[in-house]
Length: 200
Image 1 (spheres, rainbow, N blue to C red):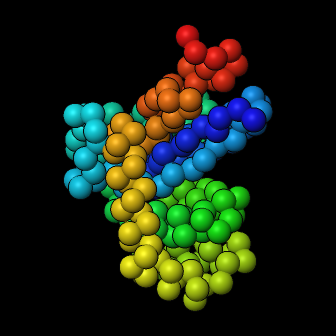
Image 2 (cartoon, rainbow, N blue to C red):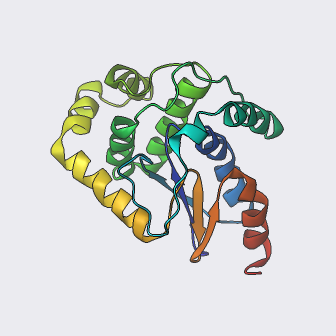
């Protein structure tokens, strides 16, 4: 089987959200799968490459308008959230706890979290919303909440972020296939060509 596409995202990233709405159809079209990796791109994130996008840029008027335009271009519902730059560690921890047990369910939950933030303007930094979204998918609410607060989930996310840093991930969304790195939603056509015809 062909190598999967590693898809790195931060739940606070509007471009990560748009990519999450597109990536599965793209990889399936080419007989691939996507492996999702939630990360937190904040002040503690130290990519191997010396590249960092200032947080102020992601909150700029340009990015806010660009996100709306990009979502419309891709046919993805989008409403700019009233809370910008949420810290999404709890969501990332919950994602990896689910992904280690049921990757398909984790992807469905991740998409519901993204939509809660970028369509319904809900506060996904809060545990209450995350648990509610999990329960809606049949996940035991008590077990899920306990897992997010457990020290093991913190270490699991830490290991995921450290591996992302080593692999040269520096932003959201980020894709890696067969060792080739693609950054940002605008690289999807390049990723598609790679999947269609191989290295170029």
